[in-house]
Image (cartoon, rainbow, N blue to C red):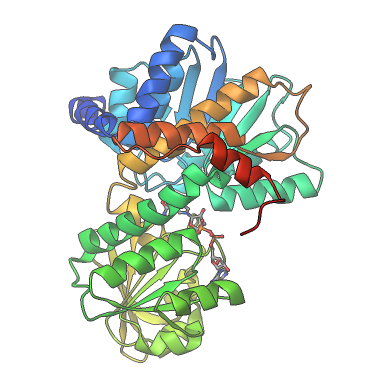
Length: 418
Ligand code: NAI
């Protein structure tokens, strides 16, 4: 078996972490039990490019239980849990190529190692795997379809489909309600603050926390920061989201105004240079700046470097930039996803639903091969989304009401008014 992980001796700790996550993934467990019996992925080769965490490990184990041959690499150079990667190789026989802190060259060579397996299904998070597969160097004849985990990846893949260059169908797992309503909002909301706190141990109460982007992730971070006593300021470029933030009780202003009042800045936009040179120049000395959006392009670190007379690492995941004006700015985790770099990513309970979507979407692609689907980006079928919500509620012991025949009739009719 081919693999490239930091140290196989870490596998004992990794296995314990995988089992700990599994406790909180009851929906995925049910899918694994069914997959073990039915083997819907029998002999299907799956190339996965996902954050190599204990929750992802459980998805990989589920896919393998369904009969798939799995190859896994990281979707971000800083998000790998090395002990989990070791356990996937040692205890579960899954070809894993991921090392926390790998450089860009290794990151792409790991993607290439996974693609060398000649996959039939791709599972991506951010679309680096799919874009590499479309580089012209690969034969795509075997491909049935793929799934995409995150907002940024879905945007990239829709752009490929629009330009007519996407060569196989993709299911946008991110767009399922049981994904972004919970994973992006509650998962990113909690784990981003967890990441900031683990890296800095900063007190949020009474601080001005600037949240750039009030999408699903930004809403979650703003909500949780407020809950911890921070004064939350939101920056947006979308009028609707900006009104929503205002009515949710946050201050809204442009980044150029927020720059001079913020103590802690978090970007969650999927956009580039949201915190730029002119913002850094206005910041208070001691400002902490981090990102939880997919790519490390949201903070213009190269521009900050140019404006700095000194850069030094003050502790793990914290770099101090001393500007020529003498002020100090602290950048966390090199501008990479802070929740995965310095914390453990999303809690298993939300990844349970995201990865239930992943595994059921892969099964759907096998049942609906290319002859039935176009080279487009598809939503997760509504019945899958609804089933996952139903199973999650059942696993939490929560019951809900059912429509009575009278209510069904009423809701389907237009004749009855008052
Ligand atoms: P979204 O599309 O719901 O929200 C993004 C928001 O940013 C939008 O409201 C947009 O108007 C706003 N925006 C864009 N440019 C801006 C700018 N220059 N200034 C201020 N606001 C701006 O996307 P979502 O789902 O919230 O995802 C955001 C990013 O987080 C994506 O890159 C996504 O892939 C990533 N993500 C990260 C996760 C993590 O674990 N850290 C988990 C899920 C998503």
